Image (cartoon, rainbow over all chains, first blue to last red; front, side):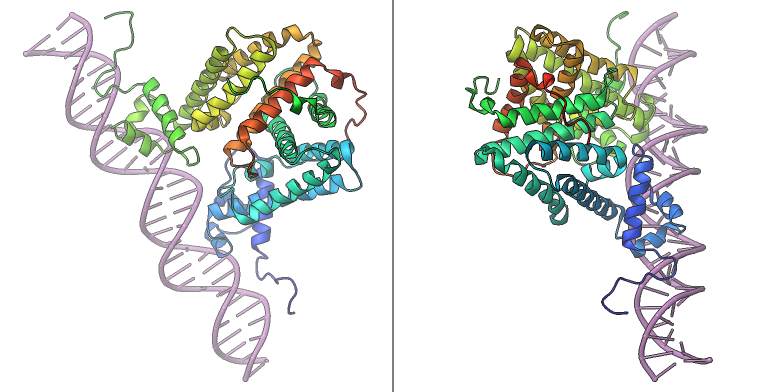
Length: 205
Length: 205
DNA sequence: CTTGCAAAGCTATCCGAGTTAGTTTATAGT
DNA sequence: ACTATAAACTAACTCGGATAGCTTTGCAAG
């Protein structure tokens, strides 16, 4: 068999399998630190055997982060398909939140990538950025404003889900509603963006 | 000398000193993990000596987080003194960002508290929440809306500074400007809050 | 079918960080 | 000065990551 998939031998262990299993483990216990011992056990193998497929724990963490970045990009991409404007913005925001809800450990691991500015990891982030650019296109913002807007949306959504995951919201008010409130705030502003033409009166202290 | 400060003996080591030194170390190298070995060295002492003052590394981390939470609350409090309305909101937001800029390691450590829902840590968070409640009072939001608004502001500011600190903003556009854009977005919405009376048309998928 | 080899697993071992036990020593209070 | 206590130290243990080197096994070429 030439040119096809790599045929795994013996235990069926593979870089791919390891990364995905590790990601699953982190989802099951997002708080605690994953150990190679537990990972190996979950794979039915002794710890050193992992080193036939990965270079180090740090490298594995990086791989997980890359996996997470692409998984997220995939989900946002799917959410945006066939939608445009406000609809697309809402859908992507909710898709991001769903990602964090469904894969909390993977999301955390992606945030804490050992080497955040590495090529392959940036690629995933870039996919998301490009999507946002295209979705925001029709709003007719200036180039600079568009960057501000993208940063704002990322900050809002990322901030919300991070605080939510960390248990930072104590009040007994529906979180879905709060999230909707937040994203609609963005949508409203990007539609009538007088805000950006306000005198920036309070500039820095 | 009775009733005064605890007079430290010998090396002058104290729980307080340890926590503050550890926080400083984290600020100097926010990325890397602090080790007790290095901390002890910085204090001119052998590692096990630390255990005369702290119970464990985890407990130390918790103490650092508590310290950070109160430091943040102090700064936000100072920023809000003598201000009201939009002015207060802007000032507090910038104070938060300045905190993260000046004490990046302490901020990170505060986020990653081992026991995020512990009493003493919540106290710091509560101080901030109460401030926000008081500042938002005059805007005449409903009780529920006020919670939504507070969550939104926290998400926005926290999300922005976290992404900024993680190097998540690549584009060559001024970050101060983006931050101002973000906070003004909030201020604008909380002033004329038609957004919250919009039909919540897109509710969840 | 045999055989050889490379990949993948294993055991044994090392290293470094956190932690504990038990000893020594400095200081504070009598 | 004397003693009690707290704080520092050395020595040693545990546990997780990592390396070395041996052994097994699956595949493929002869």
